[in-house]
Structures are given as structure tokens and as C-alpha cells.
Length: 340
Ligand code: NAI
Ligand code: MG
Image (cartoon, rainbow, N blue to C red; front, top):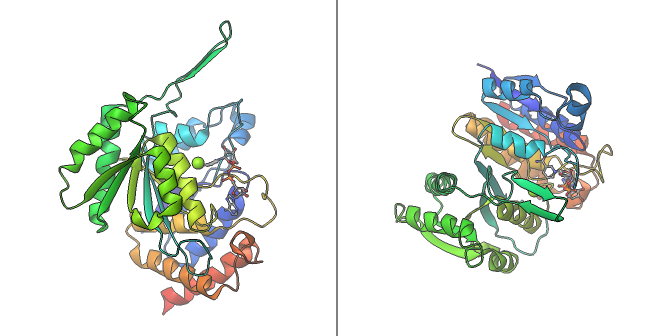
């Protein structure tokens, strides 16, 4: 039976890394029926007058699963982030961002294996913003709910237990943000008692940043609120080779949208320079979510092989290959592995 998936190529490097990822998915032999939604963000504003038209949400609600490329958000003006809106509309409260080394990429630490669990629907990204032009005062409210805190922290502990991981660190700023971050920390301490098999500790976010760039190998699963999780996941990406190689998933109780951590990278868009590894690893997460473990394992193994050999890598990780050259080489490996 084919999997019906909504496909959002997005903009910037999105269409390039999506094309590369589809080539690799095709090589797995898993059957997909893609509902391709080209116009989203600025393109949808031009065509439909809104950045996230209802038919896109309807498609994801029907298929339950989406694979998406990045979508540009105008900075400091213009429409609200489609990425944030999607997560809120579909209640995709858990943003799961694994960061681990690939062979052959030189980094300061050889043994990083982290998963960041970012609360994805509230906090400073709640969208509760106000500007009072008379007083020239701007507010952006960091709304945290007990329910929202509880479900992301529980999600993290359960995920850790399922994957045989043994430590959860909660990152917060409860010394200063006594209400919002304080409630998040308190929920974490309470839930941790239900998981005596998993070590629990917490770090104040500024210290967490320092710890991660000095001793990343001491950390395992990190759960945190929306803004902190956004920042920590780019930081953690930097530990293992950059935004070109780290995957991500937005998961809720009903739907899942798979997208890499990186954005639309306008500085390299349209030049064949983008590394599709991040979205390919994201597709690997999607395959596991769909129960296609053999296909996911084949992608994982083929990626490790290609990176160990180091012959066909993109420029961000020290190679010279173009996006599709890398994808072609990888797809051939995947094909060989699944037909063996
Ligand atoms: P970015 O992640 O697009 O780029 C940051 C740096 O990393 C750039 O130098 C870029 O060239 C590099 N980079 C990113 N992905 C890469 C890849 N696959 N291969 C090689 N190099 C890669 O972040 P930036 O520049 O801050 O944001 C650009 C736009 O993307 C903004 O409009 C932002 O709102 C949007 N964005 C969208 C996201 C999403 O759709 N989920 C997530 C993050 C940002
Ligand atoms: Mg980000």
C-alpha cells in the first residue's frame, strides 16, 4: 500500500533539497503518492492572498503526514511565519531534532549524540504581540501553559525510554522568568519522578549553551521551551557539521510534518550548492514514523558509507559535489542496499 503524503517543496533551497530527497526515497522502493503543494508563503500570498491557504492544512489533515522544505519568512515585517502557523494549526507540539556525528566530517567533538525536544506551539512564539504607537512600546508575550509543558516533557521522557536513552536535561531560565520558565521546570521535576529509570537534571539556558560547546558528549536528550529550543538546535547543528546535515520532525497526537532544522538559505539558493543530507535524514525519520524500517536503515547506512568515503560531498562539508550529484550517488547506494 502506497503512503499518501503532502509534499511542500517550499522556497529558497527548498525545491532543490526536496528533489534530491525524492530521488533517494524513490531508490528505497517504498511507494508514495505525493500531494504536491507548490504555493505556500510568498507564492501563496500572490496567488491566494494568504501565506498558508486552507487547502494545504486540509491536505495534511487528510494524509496525516507531510514532508516539507523550508519557507522564507519576511524579517521584522510582513506575514507571520508559515512554519510557526503550521505547527500551531496542526498542534504539532513536539519538535524533535537529533544531532549526531556523521563519519568523515571533521568537528571538534567526535562523540555528539543529542536529541533536542523543542516545545513547538507556545512560549515566545505564541504570536501574542502588540505595538502601542502612542507610547512606542512593543510586547511579545511568552505564554506557557501547564498542559503544553506537560505534554512536551512527557513526550521527551517517553521517546527517551523507547530509544533506550538514559538522561533528560531540561533547559530553562527559571531564575529570571519565574512564572513561565518556572512552571516548565516544575512540571519537569514532577514528571521525572514517573521515570526513575531515566536520569533527570536541569540547566539554566545560558550555562546550557556553554556546556554544549564545551562538553556536548555529557548530554543526551534536552527538553526546552520554543525559543530556547530554536537556538539550541542551531547551536547543536554546528557541533556536528552545520545546518546541512541535521534533521527534524514536528509531531503532534494526530499529525506529523517532517522538515529539516535549516531555513531557505537565500545566500545559496538556486546554485545547486545546498546539502540535501538534512532533508534526507528527515525523510529517514519519516520512514521510521511510517514503519518502513528497512528503507530507513538503508538510507542511514548509505549515508554513513558515502560520508566515510568522502568522494561525493557538498561544499558545506568540505566537498565539491552539487546537490543532485550527491543525491545521485546516494540513491545508487540505497538502491544497491535494498536490492541486495
Ligand atoms: P538558514 O538556515 O536558511 O541559513 C543559515 C546558514 O546556513 C546560511 O549560510 C545557509 O547557506 C546555510 N545552510 C542552511 N541550510 C543549508 C543546507 N541545506 N546546505 C548548506 N548550507 C545550508 O537561516 P537564515 O538565513 O537565518 O534564514 C533564511 C530564511 O529561512 C528566513 O526567511 C527564515 O525565516 C527562514 N527559515 C525557515 C525555516 C523553516 O522553513 N522551517 C527554519 C529557519 C529559517
Ligand atoms: Mg530555527
